[in-house]
Length: 244
Image: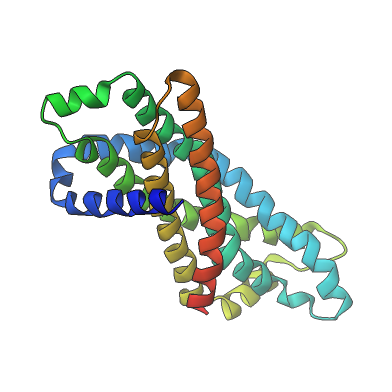
């Protein structure tokens, strides 16, 4: 475990050192950014909408029983922007994009394409890791912003249409505006940025460490997704403590 952590930290520092070469690989960054962002919008929209709806559906009747049903807007707003949107979107991207990164780089490692890059004096970190890490570090926070807005809309719709809650859109967003601050949204975006770096580094590292043919590729993909989710959940606790 400590060896893997050290290797991932070394990979991250080497990737940061190659940032001046980013413009040279801009086309690969744009391609990866499209895959991470635009191709994931529909799933993000569906997941976020129903997350907001579920939070409103679960908490609304409880708030009504305690006579504070107008507070549902702030509760849903805080829960989504500070916790649910960054964590759930990071897990979604880990499953969809992290697995793809591990599989692509793992296939290149198994079929000796990475060795061919080194033979042509092309650094694999510059060519493979840098564009993926930059694109996911930019794309995931943007997806989280979109997720927060859609989640708020889903919570407002459920609160308005559910007869047991009965909070209209105006009251919902008025309480949300009074409760949620810019710093709360910034906390969620900071978390998503850290989680994006985790997903990118872990996935690329697992791909570069792949051995053993097609079965090894499958193992690397599984390990990449599992390790990303575990590290996201653990870091979420410490980041929450720090940001409090």
